[in-house]
Structures are given as C-alpha cells and as structure tokens.
Length: 319
Image (cartoon, rainbow, N blue to C red; front, side, top):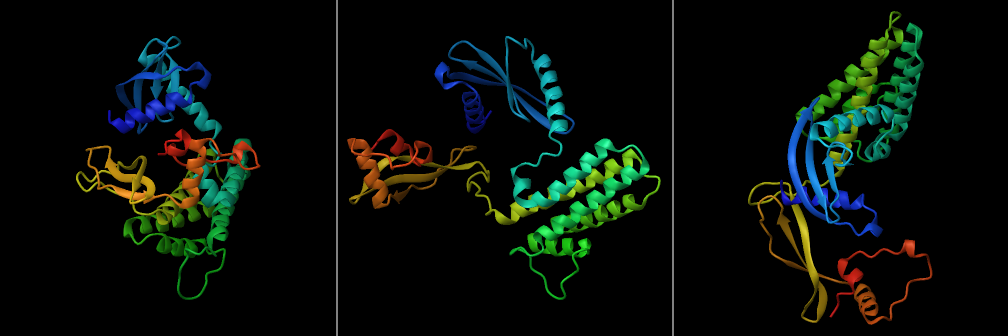
C-alpha cells in the first residue's frame, strides 16, 4: 500500500465520519485485492480512535461496520450485490463528464433505455433503434460547430453521421489507433441503429446490442474529448510514475516579499524537485495580516460565499 493510497482511504473514512464525534482514523491496513467481472476491488481494515472498525472496499468505494459484517467474505459479497443494484438503478444517469460533453445526446439515449423497459413486441424493439439513431445524430448536432472541430472541403450534411464522426476523430486525436477506433465504432454503431430500426424480427437481445453500442460510442467520445482538453500529465523524472503532487511550505519571506515555497514530489519513489518561491500578491498578504492581527472582517455577504484558498490563511500562520 502506497502512502497516497493510505491517505486516500483515511480521507474517505474521515469524510464519512460526523465531525462532532471527534473520532479519528488511527490505522489503515490493506487486507487484499479481488477481481470480479474484470473489475479490481481493494479491501481495507480501518481502525478508529474510538475502537470502531470499518471494512472499506473500493470500486465503488464504500465502508461497512465490522460489527455488522464479521467476515471479509460476507462484506465483499454484500458489496458486490450493492454495486449491481446501484449500477442498474443509475444505468441512465450521466456522470459529470458526460453531462459536460454529451448532455443532449445522453437524454436521447435515456429515452431509448426507457423505451426498452416497456418494450414487448418487435416494433417496440425497433423503436429502441430509432431512439439510439436520434442519440447519435444529437451528438453530431451538439458538436459540429465546436471550436475544436477542424476539417477541409465541403461541409457534410447533418444526417451524415459517419462523415461527421470521421471529422471528430481527426480533430480529437493525432494518434492513429484511438482515431481509427472512434471511426470504426461510430460506423458500426450507426449501421446497427439503422438495421434495428428496419428489422421486422427485432428481439430484446437485438435491442440490447444496439443500446450497448450506443452507450459505448458516447463513452468513447467523452473520453477523447477529455483527453483532448487536458494537458499532458506530469511524470516523475526518476521513476516515470504519474503520482507527482505539488507540496508547499508555510509562509516564508524572501527579500522583503512573502509567499510559499513549492516543490513537486513523487509519491511512488520520493523524488523531489527544487523549491520555487510563489510570491503572494499584495491584497492577499494584507488579508493574511489583518486576519492574524484580528483586524480582518468578512465582506458584507454570507459566509458561504467566502473561500479561503491557503492553509496559511486558515491558520493565520503569518510572521
């Protein structure tokens, strides 16, 4: 168990503990990892200062009182069952990433899932194909005029989903494999929706296949959008790990200026970069001094609107 892994579990348990209880995490032990249906789950035994003990299981992370679940096998079985129920319950609930990038098309997809829930005859399953086709077209309309879309030549018609997804793939990534995968998945998914729409012998399994393909297309598109928008992740120069975090000291003075010393640190191997001085702007320094001397007063608005952005501000740690 890495330090970062332990810290994340500590923070999770603390976030689930009522502040008024004053109960703190005293020990975190990793007791195993299990893989079920291509998903890995890490298992932890967490001790609290009060004597309370929790099982914590990841993917999706949850905690369970050991007084309720005596054995690890018992709690893991319950955790898997709970995950299945939640996944089914929220099958059509988009996550934050999907809300940002495929909101309109996802609403169309949710309509297809609702239609599937009530489908009984072939024409009902065909209607699922129509709704999935509408979801793919909504994804085209939602992004065809975006700033990140680049193409040369004549502009395709809106209904030409295959051409548009070829443009999206070329605009989102220069890597040939993800680009080719998006193009191929979009082509096949579009063909499946059209096929189901006109397939007179459509069955429940046929509709499930098309629903799965449509969902996968939107998920892949979302991931490529995020990958396109994000800066390249920093890697440790010593061990090539991605687990590089920025650490800071308290308030320091350099040549008459106040600020914080920052450095990058690798959680995996312990490598540290050289420190750099981050000078505070004058207005921020004034707020810190006022806070430390007791002359600071909040603006005339609710305290919920205030945001303290540095530990030094919260502690009044200013010389």
